[in-house]
Image (tube, rainbow, N blue to C red; front, side, top):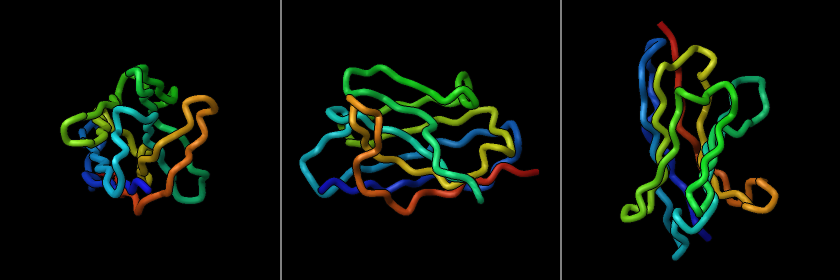
Length: 121
């Protein structure tokens, strides 16, 4: 079963940038062949979808990050990325990556440890 390991989080000031990475391993599954997404969970809130990329390349973003975040993948490295610009305090959360069903949009893999993003001055 494919496993995902997130990295790249940290503490950043409002208006700053971070790039998150999600490395896939443990199986022959390739990120470019799967629907892959970034999700986040803030304290006291439910996990929410941030961005998704379909195997054909189409992308979807939640309204609050559209125009600031960009999801991409490196097929050679089998890695998913999330470029986050113009960060706001409300972006503070643990960020996770996972594959999702391209027919239903429902996450379908195992959740990793996530990577903490804290936006604060």
